[in-house]
Length: 70
Image 1 (cartoon, rainbow, N blue to C red):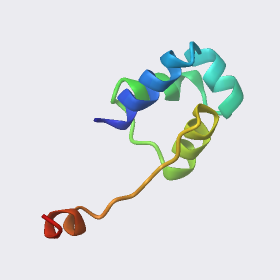
Image 2: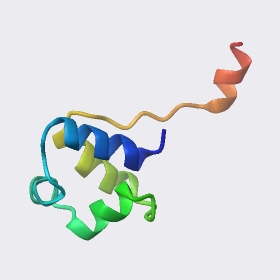
Image 3: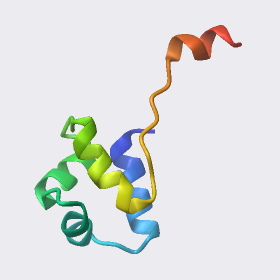
């Protein structure tokens, strides 16, 4: 699942708007719309600003480790 879809889904489940998320995260509405739409490639710092108020956190997984466990 793409990060933008995860953000949109969580925001909607919390019954929040893009404007409200922008206000509490300090990230512009334009950037949030672009991320949710899959048109932006945000920095880790920007993602953290958005994910934190949504109660989410960024996790980096090494795909190589995942495939060797199978």
